[in-house]
Length: 396
Image (cartoon, rainbow, N blue to C red; front, side, top):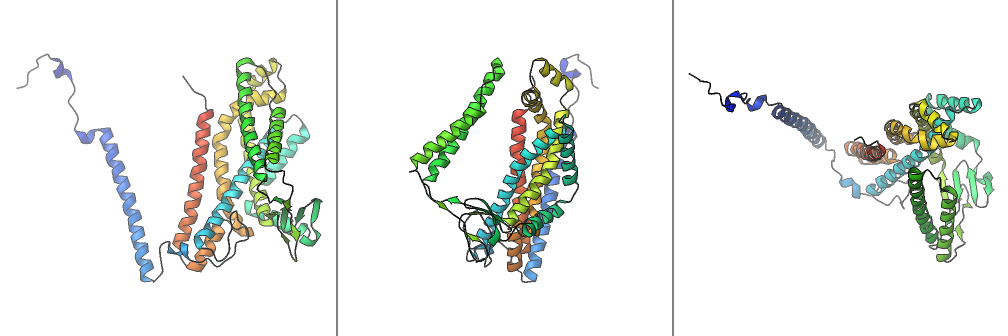
């Protein structure tokens, strides 16, 4: 017969068995979930390999080292039809990254300007911004790509009758042709530009810190531009004062030499940028409206003008609301670049599709496309999450 001794041990509750511990049960079910997922994928992979072997279809990525045998219209690296499939897919990958990166930059700039313009007290500016947003975001992107491509190909003149507003610059239905530096001395100009931009950023952060601490507004833009221009000139002299350029020259059907922005890239860039900018504009507008009216009135009582209020008070607070949905738009733009195949731009989907058609290895080709877009999307998400965390308010 149990007896109560009055010691403190007798007052402690009985220890629960381990399978009733919530932490143990959580770990157990997570292990079960992982085993189930691995088992399902293992079954699918094993079954796929067996079916491929039964039908004598090659599998694996050995085709990477085979000769591709097809041409690619444009790329950031040298490529010919005698190169391997791996290099062809790399060209497509770089083309996808190029249009996504440039599209994100310009969509952000245009979207921010249109979003602010929609809140303008000027009636015409606000209505024009509304019209832009409502038209662009309510027409399917694929149709917009067809529109821009047809506009460039059908409206602009042929290469022989190209517009040439500046020396060596031509605009035709084949794209945009510009002179390009052809001397190593221009690397000095590039170095001056990079150093100048780094000093510009340092100057901006320094002046912002002074403004936050003392309220004094130091000039940043004009000195920064002058500094960048001066360093570029110094780099030009350091590089030996090069003056020659690789000029585009008209051939039988098109231009050769110089730099070229193809009609396919122009149409894709315009479509992706303007379409995504319409959504970003609405995000910017909603972010600005999320800042209370009292912030505007308090800043106005200090004598700040509307532009200064927007720049120093409203936008820094609105950014915390704007960044998360804008990240989704960046991801959408990157994934929407897969529509490039509809107008003939050689992105990763286009080059992988050609590879699939020639090698018959569809599973590997689709896996490459999925892997590329997954990697790009996760990279963008990681960067934007880092930036969002950096600008978030630190609560005590």
